[in-house]
Length: 590
Ligand SMILES: [Zn+2]
Image (tube, rainbow, N blue to C red; front, top):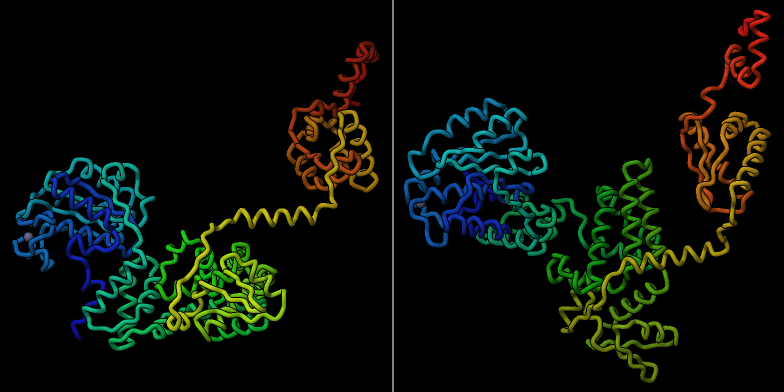
């Protein structure tokens, strides 16, 4: 066996300053050590692989060092530091709560806490994945955490802060670790590569960073894996192949096809993607991300959220110019719907294809068409010369270009000279032509898109006007009776009877309340709600009418069922009946 050490361990940070992407936390801890105001218990929260355990160890090592430097770095020479570096320190106790979560495990730990350290000033207890402790283990731990001896420090780490009980939370100083930014990950990978004499492609590192989703440790594991394939040279193409990533080129191509409504090309591209073994949902999500990135490019303010390298950023900006917010927002909506339905669909391929076709049909509105044409024309021309000269044969094209605000158009003898434009385009062109690039200074507005849609819908529905005749209680009663008859005649006797039990009440201008005796009646009415409302709205000429059901104690509860009940009821109205019964000795039950 070789003594290969994975990068994540080999390059584990050893000082506060080497911890990546958690500047706020390292700064706070450093100044706390400096001022000797260190808390007794800490809770490190945050996603996995962002440096919680590393920072806990650095903290443990530093506060036990005899000769801390002025910028809070452990000396690496004192007895404590040496034993720490050899992993033989008695001051640091690590417990992985994921596998040791019983009460006994915690009791063992609590028993140790009493003893003062032999070397160094503190005993440090690092409990990883603390949310995995059982309820009784938590309770056993609570007392110690509340009143720890002076020489004990606790560092709890968790990926799931919400699972920590409040009594623990309130006893700790809490630090929330952030996901590491792509730029920081790339910087770190680049550092590791230079230390290991591996030549790397920055694009490749960006891809790894993206794939590791903010977890530094994951990025290093990926890096190790890829390097082992590619023998001290890491290029973009290899990373794409090995990570099974659909690279940007596909998404740029597909987006172009969407914008030109080129459905046959779209279907072929998607087929190619499937044939290369990619999953449809993966693709749709990737496309959604691509569209989101294009949306970010619509506004100069949000371009910074892209976190791509410079070359790629230009490519995004170029394609973004060929689209607009309306297209992107609608397309994102469609990809999102497709993503939700994907798992349920029995024909997933068709689902994705339909989604692509839908997107391409929204893309092909006039504005996009113009934009895309300009984009393509300038693109081609840019290939030939630095200044973009578009020969124009028809007036239509002239108008189109005039409308595009960020292009200066000079119309001279059927020639349009476009200045200060689209240096944007492809990287190849960019390297040949030294141009400045223009981004529209406007904001993304989803509201605009939605408003347009609503207007459109209103227009479509404009021939349907809502009826809103005034209605009264009497009118409602009259139509109600008609309705009961109507339902009776259409063999909905049950419904007719139910509706006849109580009179409806008009509560306000449009709400009608039906008092009902029980929930099964309400169910029946709700089942027929549509028919009831349709009848009432038609007869009363009011589309705003709505129904409320309400359970009431009705008089019907006292409905006489037995003969003697009926007799009692009747004799209330006619006192002679009782006399008659007594004189004749009648039994009303017979
Ligand atoms: Zn030291």
